[in-house]
Structure formats: structure tokens, C-alpha cells
Length: 185
Image (cartoon, rainbow, N blue to C red; front, side, top):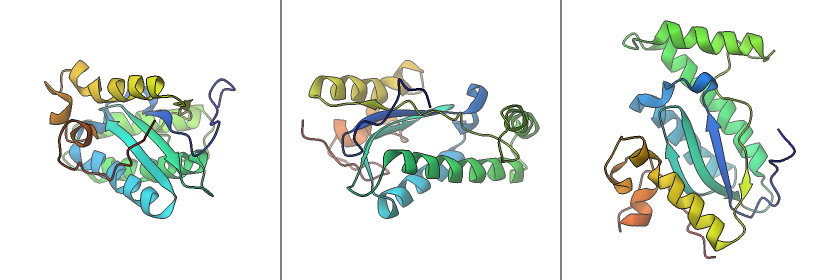
């Protein structure tokens, strides 16, 4: 990870991004997004993850996260990416209806070999670019950016219409798919 991007304090909210290698739109299918949601639920329940905001886009995810005392963002991100990488690649390989299966598996295999990965394939880029959100202005800027992502991509008209996002938690009185911890700044 570059020295520019470092977690300053695990209890401070950080904006993080994880991108599929080659910007492959492997997360365009609902069942692959569900693997990420299940992993995030596990990290919340067992790894001290505090999820403040999130969005799953077709080729990347953005989150605003922090951790309970005794846990660290780096460890949560490492574990979540390792688990989801294997599960999603396996799901792609086993999905007989996945029209892009061969192409995606070749792409992930090539990247794994080219980067010297210890795994047979690489799904996520290694970095997650943590940016500390240590004041209300920074937090709100990244929160709005994250929730507007599906609108800018033309997926939905309004942020709260996108299922795989915390926008519903912020724009309505309804709960979203994942438990959110609101931040008082």
C-alpha cells in the first residue's frame, strides 16, 4: 500500500475503495453482490467492523468504515477481500449461466500470475486507499459521493432507489440491507 494511503486511527471513519482487477464489471450480477453483503455482515458481527456507508458498483465498492477498539481496518479489509475473492471466483466458475465466465476467469487467472499472487487468481486490486474522514465536511463530501455513484453511472434516478447501498438508510426512514452505524460529527 502506498505511503499516501494509511489508516491513521482505526476508530476514525475512513473512506475505502476496493476495485475488481482490470475494472471488470464482475459485480453486475445480484448473486455476486450478495456474497459481499454476507461477508460484510460477518465482519460486522465477528471482526469489529463499523459500517457507516457503502455502495456496491459493477466493478468496485466504496465504504465508509471504522472499527471497534481492538480491531483494525487493515485486517477487516484483508479478510473481507480474501474471502469474497475466493467465493466470487468460485461462484463465477460454477455458474453455467454466466455468459462471461471464461473471459472473467482468464482475466483473474492472468492477473494472479502476472502479480505473483499466491492464489490461482486475483479478483481485487491489492489497494483500498483509506482516506481519514476526521471532520464533518470531509465525511459529508465522501458520503454524498458514495451515494451518488449509482446515479452518476445511470443505474438509478435517485440514490435511495439503489438496493446495494446505504442511501436508503440516509434518505428515508427505512433500513437497508446492512446495519449502519451513523456518525455524529
